[in-house]
Each structure stands twice: as structure tokens, then as C-alpha cells.
Image 1 (cartoon, rainbow, N blue to C red):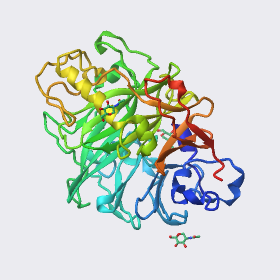
Image 2: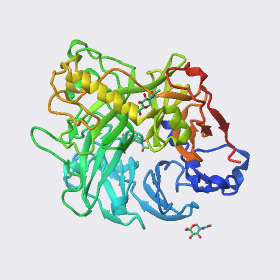
Image 3: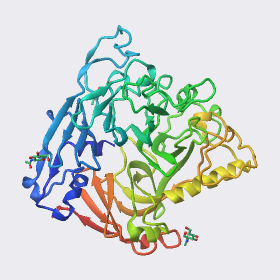
Image 4: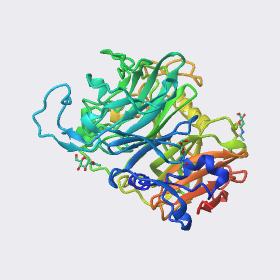
Amino acid sequence: MEGQRDSKRTLKQNPGCFSKLSFMWWLLVLILPEVSCEQSFTTFHPERREWAFNHMTVHKKTGALYIGAVNRVYQLAGNLTLLVSHDTGPEDDNKACYPPLIVQPCTEPLVSTNNINKLLLIDYSQNRLLACGSLYQGVCKLLRLDDLFILVEPSHKKEHYLSSVNQTGTMYGVIVPSQGKDGTLFIGTAVDGKQDYFPTISSRKLPLDPESSAMLDYELHTDFVSSLIKIPSDTLALVSHFDIYYIYGFASGNFVYFLTVQPETPENSMSSSGPSNDLFYTSRIVRLCKDDHKFHSYVSLPIGCVRNRIEYRLLQAAYLGKPGRVLAASLNISAQDDVLFAIFSKGQKQYLHPPDDSALCVFSIRDINAQIKERMQSCYQGEGNLELNWLLGKDVPCTKAPVPIDDSFCGLDINQPLGGSQLVTGHTLYTESRDRMTSVTSYVYNGYCVAFVGTKSGRLKKVSLECRSCFLERCASDKLRCVQYWTCLS
Ligand SMILES: *[C@@H]1O[C@H](CO)[C@@H](O)[C@H](O)[C@H]1NC(C)=O
Ligand SMILES: *[C@@H]1O[C@H](CO)[C@@H](O)[C@H](O)[C@H]1NC(C)=O
Ligand SMILES: *[C@@H]1O[C@H](CO)[C@@H](O)[C@H](O)[C@H]1NC(C)=O
């Protein structure tokens, strides 16, 4: 994870170097190319070197660039001219203070603390920016897109605190707008042992009116069903470092998806095994229906890819894009369908120090949905268990029920939440064994899909996905040849 962050310390632009792609330059600035044309780059630096950039987003229409950094949110013009700098920290805080000082005094000593940007999302429907930080147990601000004026900084309710983890790359959010109505914000976050305070995943109200008292309330919260899932304390008692890191999220069709990494829990009944010092991690894809406030549609399956019998299972980064005509044909989908590009490091160990051997893989959302549907169908036939031991704590058998399960099935109060152990396997497009890939984005040009991959050492790779006809399972996977370029951006 840290590689990606390190490489975002400086933004660079070189208008002369790649004019054809100049409207896409923002894709290229994710990395720090050590190239000879460096002196002609425009750069933008944070005020202090250690106030790293955490997140970046570009407005689809205006091209304005928003950066969430340590202690700052910046608005830049497309040419990297600073337009607004908005302070978010440092402030006096103490992680042990809960609820935050604003609500009730805390006896712990307060010290000047950095505010790490954890989430930076544009809410297009209301022309505002949601920026969440690590201070005060993780509060958010809604800022006006034009000038970063604070519309609201809700902090008077428990729901307003998302998580105090001060590590970026542990939280992800997805905004689901609703035409003319209040939107929904899905949040997945690491909780760092505070599983009683913070749900690992939840859906919140995002009212049109920023001053609405319902801001960030759970969509549904009753004694019986709620729009949230908490990690049970029993799970932490057994796997003390258990947490779920949310690396990426997106909405596609009727669903919201998150891509996570979490320590493996014992395969069988959790109660039958003692405290474990497990070093194995699993990347998973989590899917929920957009409108499912009861979270009955929760399904989670392991995700990764394989090449030459080597498994790549440690998610580093992901990006939802379009395949373009050529890649779409290879995947047997249409060019308008969504595809997910994802980078995984080799194996399942050492998530905190991932191996350099890494793979770029593609998944069609259609395949992912088909596999989730199959999983639900088999469970509703009464086969096997729910296989979600970190949450259920024990083996819970699937219940046979004569329910038709189609592509839009959103769950019932039985057979949920549903896990699974069969790997959702992507198509491996490209591997790199020495300089770990840490970020990815993609773009379609003339029907061809091009992926831009950033590496740990700050290099940018442009991978043309003009992969000849067959990289589906029918063919030997190593027959796949993707054209690869190293960039000097020239
Ligand atoms: C950068 O863009 C802004 C806004 O579009 C414009 O006002 C400014 O003159 C530009 N600066 C340079 C150096 O091109
Ligand atoms: C995060 O918090 C820990 C202690 O809680 C501190 O040592 C560390 O410096 C913090 N990270 C940043 C980037 O401020
Ligand atoms: C391609 O997809 C269509 C449906 O979209 C399906 O009928 C067909 O069997 C698929 N072809 C292959 C080779 O998988």
C-alpha cells in the first residue's frame, strides 16, 4: 500500500511531451517518472514534504483537480495552478478520546495530530466534495466544489465518526445518487479494534440539504435489521489483528461493490481453533444491492488471478473502466459493459510488505455477477454452508428454499450474509516481478484499451491491452501477449 502513497508526493505535468494524451495527463501524474524530460514538468508540491497526497479526483466536466492530503484539501486547475488550499489539520486530538471533544470533554492529553485524508469523493448531483479525515475519530466535511467553502461538518452524532485509523488506503466510499432525492453513501473502513464503535461496512444517508439533521445517518437502523455490519468481538478475540481494509469500491448496474483485503480466519468453526498467528490474507469482492437497506444482499467471495500456476491474491489497487471494442471481443462482452482492472501481489502472505511479483488482471463485471448468482443458487438449493466465519463465527448451513434467483436477486432474510470460498478468477494481462505495481487506471482510445500502471519505484507503465484473441481459460494462459511500453512520456 505504501508504494502508491509515496509515489504521489509530487504531481508532474509535461504539456509538450504527450500532446495527444494531454487531456488525460491527470492519469499520468499518479507516478513519479524518473525520466530525462523531467525538467520541463509543471509540478505541485504540498506545503511540507511529509504532508503527502492521499487521494486525488478530477471533475468530469470542469477538469478541476481535487487532492486530499495530510492536513489539506487542495483545488487545482488542470494546469496544476493552485486555486484553493483548505486546512483540515493539524489539530489537538487524542485517539483515545471518544466521543470527540466537541461532544464531551476528554481527560487524555491532547497533542497536535495530523489529519490524514481518508476519503475524497465528488457528489456530482449536489456539486459538493465529501472529504473525510482521520482526526476526531474520523469526521467528514462537505465542501462546495467551486471554492471549498465548508457546507457542513457534521460531528454531533455517533454516526458522524467513520473511523480514526490514520492510514490511508483502509477506507473506501461509494456515492449512489438518486434523481432529485437524497443520495446514499456506502462506506467500508478498517476499524483498528474499535469494532464496537465503527461498522466495517454501512450505508448512510446523503441528503440534498447539507444541513439536514439526517446527514450520514444509517439508511436503516432498528433492533433487528440495519444498514451496517460490525466485526464481532469474538472474531477479534480469536484473530487479534483481524480487520478489513477497503481498497476500492464502485457502483455498476444495480449493485455496489467493494474490494477488500482481510486476514484469513480459520476455515472451519472459529470456536474450534485457538488464537492464531495467521499470516495469510485474502482479497475479497463484496457486493450489495444499491437499494437494500437491510443488507440481505451481502455476498463476499475471494478474488484474485493465476498465471503459470502462481496465485496473485494480495490486492494492491483497482479501477473500474470500459474494455473498448478489442478487449470486449476477447472477453465476450460488449464495449459498453464495465470491466474491473486489478493489481495483485503474489501469494497470500505479507500483505503489509507485499512481494514485488505482481499481476495486472481484468474481470468482466458480468462474470463476477454470474459467479455470485451461481453461489446464491447453490446455497438456496441447501448445499453447504454460508462460509462467512469472520462474521457468523460458526458454520451455518445453507437453507433450501424454492426461490427463483435471477440477475437482480437482492437476498432474503435467510441465507445471508453469504460468503464463499471459490475464487473469482480474473484474466492475467501482465506481470511484473521486480518493481511492484501499486496503482492502475485505464482508458479507451480508438476502440483499444490502454492501462496505465504505476509502480512502487514511481515508474509509469503503459500497457496496451491489444491482447490477441484468446486469454480465456480455453487457451494456455501464457499464450497471452500484451504489448507493453515503458514510458518516458514522449
Ligand atoms: C491555469 O489555468 C487557470 C484556470 O484555467 C488559468 O486562470 C491560469 O491562467 C492558467 N495558468 C497558466 C500558467 O497557464
Ligand atoms: C498515526 O498514528 C500513530 C500513533 O497513533 C503515529 O505514530 C503516526 O505518526 C500517525 N501517522 C501519521 C501519518 O501522522
Ligand atoms: C458469449 O456470450 C454469450 C451471451 O452473452 C453466450 O451465449 C456465449 O455462449 C458466449 N460465448 C463464449 C465463447 O463464451
